[in-house]
Image (tube, rainbow over all chains, first blue to last red; front, side, top):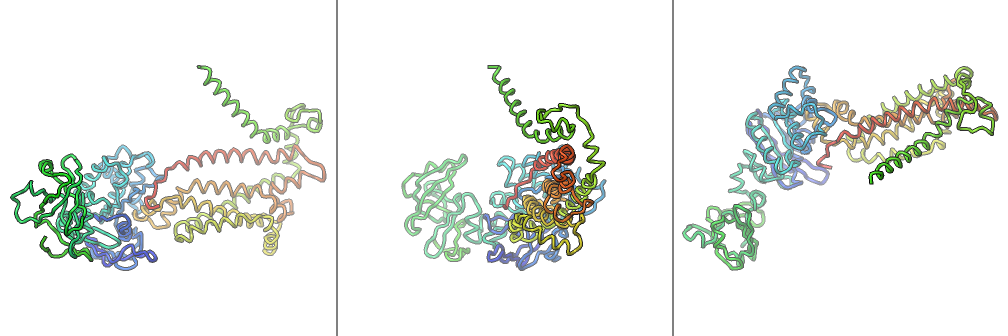
Length: 343
Length: 283
């Protein structure tokens, strides 16, 4: 059980500012995901928290105690690396025992802990194997077991699912979340995949260019993005962002409907869209189009249900409506959220 | 149709046998010669690769009883083992520090270190002789123990540097977050994973100190301190008389067991390389 807090954290590599003033605090037992495009500084942030990099400025605190000057071994933080970083010259059991040996845990207790972790993760049959003879999913479980046995105050996961096959990944994701719910250890989880971030996290922190753009619940990020970056990063497909007269008007593809399909919907913003192409996705359709007039031919994407796709006429300008409560506005220069204007 | 694989198998093994014979031939001739009587060896009508008269051991007993060969053997192994120890004690920590603790400048220094190895010993033995006499080590085995590491340490540092660099940083960082100090990580993770490289260094340093001729002949002139490579030619070539059988025996006794040991070591080495290192995501 622990609370992690970072204050004004900055890390510069020469002229490159990997982190510029990150402020972040977890709650006790929380699962926080950090998401952002490649090179946004999220891995650097994890490495600073784990103690593998010294920050240029700022502090890392665990349970209110400053741990910035401490070496990684004194931090009670367990990290699971993207490559799993198993020790190739040790058996699975020795890999799991390694952090316990560092703490001088007695042999009997060590073996009991290994058995416990192996049972929780279902890898009892693998204990005598070498890492080279494990599949990706098995390696991930061993890495998890190795992080678990030492009962850390904080877990850090650095893209632990990115080297798994798509099918294994979904199962591993569910298992990770279950493991967190069972152990209740505060967890920081880094990923570049927004679906993973939104699906796993109690709260999601969105990073870009070394800065934290927004932190909030998945619902907050989806419905109330603080800026155009979050709006375009969270959600598949991303929010339509249409520049007009110094503001950017945004609405989600799934919130637009052809007027003809919802003639009675009140309090709506209307957009005249020319749909040029539709795409069948299975449960729904994607409609690609453009908005003429004030929006200067901006590209628009709408996600439509099976029952309304019949109302869409290809190549014709057609009215689409979005409930006003779901339309968002951003400043054209800063990209930050602004007060609503009429559309 | 069924004969084709048989013919191919026979052809394969014939080719293999010819190549083996070619490789083993000098050693075989050496062994045969070592056991020959003078009458057999010096008769130009005899086939040099066969025993035309019954073999005998007299030349080998001459080598051990009436020459300084046992002293040379002892000196060679003594020097070899100490040189290996010095080389490892200096090169392993140096290579690890350069690979992990010095940043990019350390990693790039490997070429500069390797260049030292390329300076030919024929250029160095005169200045080094000055140094060796100055500190009073001339004519003792210590002169060679002092000089060989100047060759082996840079070479082995360069070699080990690439071994340590091939270990993914994340594996060591995992050990750091697992609660080990940098020293603990070095001994428990980096060192075991660099064993193939360390073995290569042992073989290299030992082979170099055993085979070197220039330094051994120049720095040491007292018989009691000579090594096999410098002692055997001076002891067994007297004027224009060559003690052929004893010469052959002296080299075969050192060469053949070492070839077997190296062969076994390399087998084990190759197995060592098969430890699959995980790929680092960041490199």
